[in-house]
Length: 378
Image 1 (cartoon, rainbow, N blue to C red):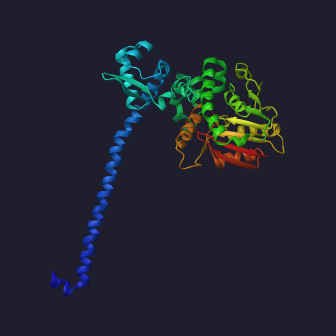
Image 2 (tube, rainbow, N blue to C red):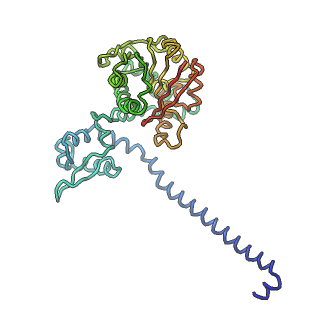
Image 3 (tube, one colour):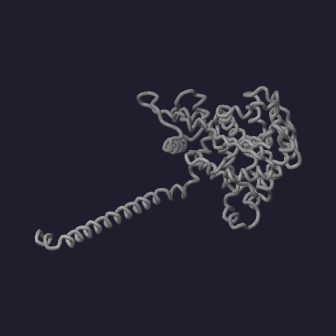
């Protein structure tokens, strides 16, 4: 070997390089195979989350309907299975299986009560399953898991193939608004779901960007539902006179609050005059043409010199570090399923509809919620 190296050093170096190259290639192949095996192993696990993905939401819905979180909250401390069984009037072994599932997913947790007994306690997540908590999302879960809502998802593929009506119309024979008008129970469920989200989002607006409401003496909440969002804003900013504007059947049953005027009407025809128009999860229900039409009516209703529109909606692809970005993508699927032309929008898409409606300046403020706050000026 030493003689070969002296006689032909370049050949020796080339041979060493070849060996190094071959070994590097082998190591690279091993890494590629290892990565593929890891991906396959992950897929073997993940696929079961899709096979039985509905189970999690079904069990959470069951927990809300049974009132598990409310019972523990009212008790004021962890409850044993026996105590829960008695309070909820449930069959013990079946309730245990439900709680075992919920504890596994860290929705509830187990805590020792005595040396020999274990109780079930609330977590920050299960507190949101209480029907009466400030951060409750129970009504939203009950809406999205209701038979009326779930039936629509079976026609999603037909919707993508552009074969006919929206999945909601395919399932129920009419659009979501007509169905709600004829089915007060479902209409109430929608209003309660929107109200529970409003309690979370409006709190985030008040804490994160209160300056949005500086100088506003009157505010019309377009599609304001039962007035939950507006009542919170009027309470936080008492100089504001609020107008809850929605369909006559909606405002007729809205709880009446001091400082708020309740007006029934159609936002496609006319919007009550105010210093600013406020939307929360309304415009995503509609296509671009409808949004432009609604926004033009708002432009007519606000002062030309200082008026503005405040839109509280998701803005897709705006922040790569947004932990709630996936919610916007899910909502976009909900819009495709439940509406004819509704969708979640990117900032570019928001600029388009607002620009076409005559708004020339836009400011977007992120808040600690699924939505962002979009201010649009004439």
